[in-house]
Image (cartoon, helix red, strand yellow):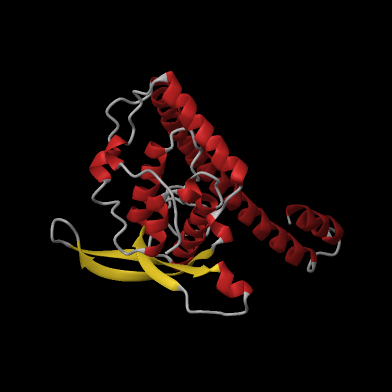
Length: 255
């Protein structure tokens, strides 16, 4: 297993009681990592190869259907040497990706962490299914999850995190056990205000998108009606002698 550095003491997640010297030292360490230009993608290939539906029991012992995603990793050195070994692989649920992102957000509040794809289709555009098990939706989410992993792996700071590496390579990522540690005891007021603003902005933008979806659906309905008018006028022009040209022109205009 390749050496990957990262925060060793999970118990201090979110601790903002730092002195000026400690804060300055953290910033310097971050800048050093950035200047190194190291990236996990230089050491391994990462992909989310496929999605699979599964059935199991949840925490309240009720049967549920969920989707898991296959994470595949392969050393880059083997590929460059012309060897194509079978990739290491493991399955992850969407909720585990959420735990990983929450961990990164709390551990690295100074880093803009890449977003995850939507958990469910909240804004349904024309001809797109709102079913979370719809193949097209699952495929879009698979691509989004792969993009998330690639963006984290290419970040000069996040790519060196030990928990992120374990998430990619070991079935037991320890994230579930660490979930309680994500609650920040002494959050930085600046980050709290920014999060509050972003949550409100997300709510407003979601409402705006819902209105836009309704308007778009109505406009599409008008477009379809006009398309039918165009066909009718064109067919009508074929049986009219005096008004044929005018009806034909009107049909083209409706189209």
